[in-house]
Amino acid sequence: MSMPIAFGLLVQTLYFIVDLYFVGHLGDVALAGVSTAGNLFFFVMALTQVFNVGCATLVAHAIGRKDPLHASEVYSHALFYGIAASLIISVFGYLFGHHYFSALAATEAIESTGLTYLYWFLPSLAMQFILTVVSASMRGSGLVKPFMIIQMAALLLNIVLSPILITGMGIFNGMGVAGAGFASSIAACSAVVMGIMYIKRTPNILKLNKQKVTPNAQIFKSILKIGGPAGSEFMLTFLYMAMIYWALSQFGTDEQAGFGLGSRIMQALFLPVMAIAFAAPAIAAQNYAASKMKRVFTTYKVTTIATTSLMFILALPCIFFPEFFFTPFSNDPAVIAVAATFLSYVGFNFVPAGLVFSYSAMFQAFGNTWPALFSTLVRVGLFSILLVYFVTQTDMAITTVWILSAATVFLQAILSFVLIQMTLKKRLLKRAQITT
Image 1 (cartoon, one colour):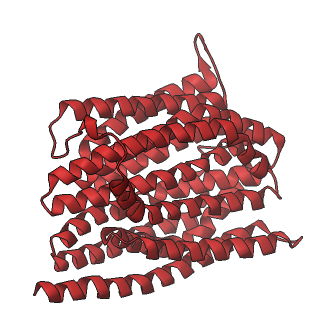
Image 2 (cartoon, helix red, strand yellow):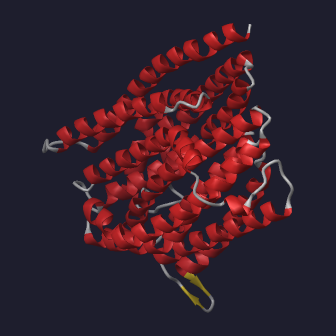
Image 3 (cartoon, one colour):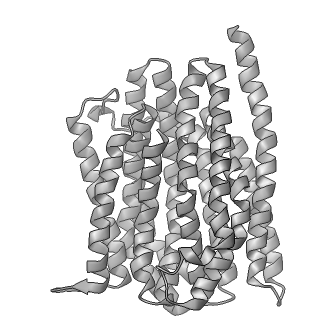
């Protein structure tokens, strides 16, 4: 399951990286503006993660209990909430987006550029809710490959449209950063259309009941209970990124552009590990519901070894050759220097971050993501407090921000390890004793 999920995550990130590639050649102001706007992607991911974790876990548990009818009910009712969320995020984005940029942008030029990009990129963000409900429900039932193909087609469309709409071609005049957002929105909308067409024409264990695409308080509460903490984790990540952009606004355009570029490359490198972490909950949850405790523990062990091994391999080029990743995206030496320095520092926290991913996956499989939320809250809270303190010091260096980030990830990994050990003893040992 991990390969199709890895591809899906890669596509989501490549939407933004494709924009960065073409926008980067428009200058550091355009790059900083798009990067700042891109942080809102974490805000949307926080909200979609509620559906992603909630739907996938509930469907996986229902399939594990041999109850496809309830799995289809979860899918149908969740789709209603996905559509509603898409409409709400669109309204809020167009009405209040300017407040976000006025608070975080280092200059008025960055604020104006970022806002222009956001207005054209919002439809793409809104479509993520519907896509997430469909893909998460299907993933919970074990079906992921068809959506890999759909996402590939949408990505190719985005790659074709981006240079045409950004820089212009033939009779088409370039739209600049607006073209980048517009290309992503067209591609995302096409993915929704293709997804709906596939579901309509293909028989599956999950059946969409149009009469049940309505509110359902019980299912909504279950989705929030399981997915809420995981969504809150991404919301904390959004706040963490926003805090960094705020701190970098004290420096200038190059610093914000460099961090935006560096953080996106880091996310792309994380994709193989996130794929394993995203696949593990569905496998472990079905075995847990079927009381196959040995398989649950094996999933935990394999996931932990795989994530840490991959993270170690990925960390090496980041620490020793960070400049390699950034030359295709920018010709500005100052921007590349900031991005490379950032990646060389955070490369040291790749392995502990891999541990956090694997622990969070198991919390999700057990249907209790509160421990993962708690560890993230401790990390982001401590980071924010220390960052505010150092920003008030007139001689703060930008590397201080990267050191704080790396140190707090190590702390989160230690805390998450303690919490997962407590959970494993409680969930696996007791249930194994009952079944025997």
